[in-house]
Image (tube, rainbow, N blue to C red):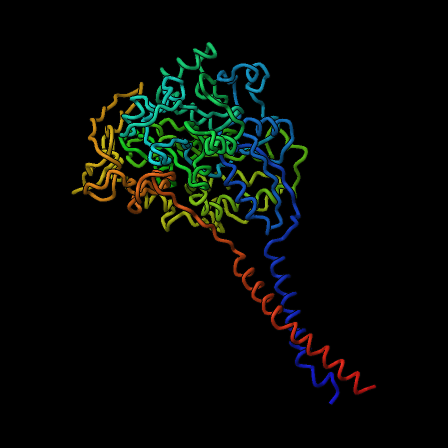
Length: 572
């Protein structure tokens, strides 16, 4: 029998393995294309940066390449007016007048002056979120992760009225003694939407205190809000949300507290302050708490007759959000926007923009407003309601080269997983009520008994919970607390050296009993999220095939070479 006939099975098996490897490699290449047909350059809001970064990666398989630089809202709008980007992201609209909060070199540079958009534009809301307060505080060798503060105390910290963590106002809110460590507020050095949202909240809830602070530094009030935080005392100014977050988390950041979108804390499991709301409950900026708060927002064109042709269509008024009476509401909640080209208005389309870019941009925004909203919660944001999705899609229709597959009127082809059958946000419909232990006056070592918050009898220091309200409303003072050792899970006394109950820093819920006290680590528990990869099955399959090839090919190749040598010997 000829050698080829005798060894055709081995050769066929080897060929089959090669073909399988080639097919798997081709499939992997299709799943993660390395080249995008259309490229868009964008910049702006670092507050919305983590969400935009995720969404831009999601649309790469559609042939859309978006290069996004989170330079801050103010810089993004400036670049838009200079024709340097295809679209930008901003947490606040174009500035109609001088930002009087800017001081020093910024104030004299013209960067804080009134803005002219120059080119035709639309505002498109893309996400909601809470401006959170990250902090770095250690007590008895353990990281504090359950800090709670009233709005009064937060404002005093960021107006340099409180200088140390053991200040009576801080410990009264928290319910436990804290070390005599200087407080270092970390603010933004650049023109920031996060600064704008935070300072507007202070202006509308603690006007007297905030205006006195601004006037003391700049000799003038900061107006309705400022994007440029006027610094004083021990404040440290950093450029960008990510830089603020990293500064706070660094070993040298002990004693710091700063403001940032919740995403920057959630993705690194870093603690944020539970903020006392107008209903008298300490709340976190979770997706549901933000959604609840923003039901009080007034949106132009959704909650009033503003037409879609108005330049400020879909812009937000958050006055009623700050003092919302729902006990779940997170008070410093807001929306963030894209600024995109608009045709058919007096101002021209940016010269760098064309229909091919409009095709890509419209498809990108359609993804963001529809399927992309399903990732908002896991990223540290909150999805936007149906009225804003529809309004955003109406604006997409005015982008040159629009190729959106979504019907703006009916939202047909909008695969948005965040709505229930009634068109309501599921995070809103299913928003949980807070624990009685989050109520003003509840002890830090709180347990719920017969529906009421009671002390387990093992918390040290005051457990008052602070005060409610500000200069614009009356407050309620909490009581004083008991004494004892560290808190323990359950309702019975525990070893005074035991750690407190393990608390999920993202939800505030008790997830288990703490371990033994002493040593380093966190005062409360952290939760680690593991993301899913769509291509994991393909990578696993390819790995298995490669392993099979490593096992099967060498014996086949060895057999072929041996047979070939024997065949040559017979021939000779």
